[in-house]
Length: 250
Ligand code: BEZ
Image: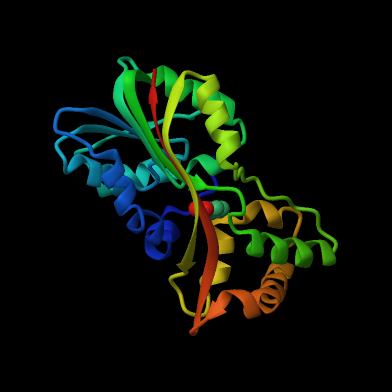
């Protein structure tokens, strides 16, 4: 992940990212005494939820500001500044968990290899990320406006299909037990500024090359372009689709 994160904006306005992961935690089913790695832990809220089970959990993130905030939020928990594409644990763990992080990793094969190497045989991998079709509406609107204004910024996301990701997992020694791609229409937290704040938090790469003073006008045009589809009942929404997978290492 690029380290351009605003961990305060993340905690203040994007807490739906971890608040919506309750049933993913149920799928993880962490047990007391297990060693669990939380990949892309952000500010540590799900790491802390996993720790409530009595498991020994380590949060891993490649962003210094997210890890600093996680350590401040949960000083008793262990957090590791590392890149999912090239990390190694001293001892294999019982489970790897990841929520809303792996869509930032275009080198998915390197990540899957490291996750496999981190797990003991039989260890489980429980994850959710943006899946094929994720934020398709937002992407279409942003790209139309950005290109129309003469800029060429790109997104940096990876939203694989079930077939693509499960094939990758199977090629790297995993057995896949559950794979789903489902819509999760998500209300953004601030009533008027929700879409702008989402773009500021997550869409920075689209705005590369856009001079600061032009950005506000472009964001306004994006809002106007997307209002008919994403403004519902006085709130902005994101057209999320989740890819959810449970697998184990052979
Ligand atoms: C997601 O959680 O699906 C997501 C978040 C930020 C940018 C793109 C996707």
